[in-house]
Length: 116
Length: 114
Image (cartoon, rainbow over all chains, first blue to last red; front, side, top):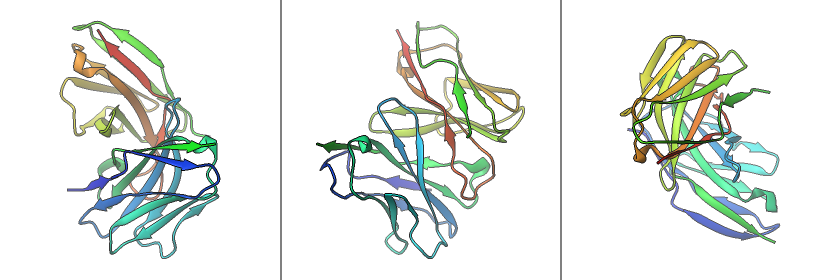
């Protein structure tokens, strides 16, 4: 069975600091994909970044990067130079190679609060 | 941009009522999904559909049914609403089977069952 674990229910970070949100996963698939989503208090889920299991380089999208350590089955999200608008819930998610109809499983989320 | 529209942002219903949550996407995606989101539990998949009139159970289908008569529309039905179905409901769509395509989400419906 596939599983996503986010061990940090909540985090507080000072504005402009970098922040790392932890994510570990469990799968027996050789090919899989990892996603991070952001959910502001308004409720919509915003796709941030994707990492494929065979990608040789860590994914980056602007201030977001993914610290992918395949042997440790971790896919931590790094946000550089945090901003007040980064305050939100963050979800790590995974799609397996044989997932029917692009199913994705989600972790329980981390609530990030940025202090001014 | 992909647009996934859920019919209501907030909804209040009574125990025993039949409740319909509607979702429409405008990008001709094959796959559509219904999740519920509860604090500390993340998103849990209720049902999904990979084609018109096709549906499959997710992880928590009990008490729910779905309908997909047209490609762009996916409805979630609470046959007889109960208080433990009070939750945030999120609809999503995606264009491909697997791969690096993310799911695109609607804004969610906060449903309260009294």
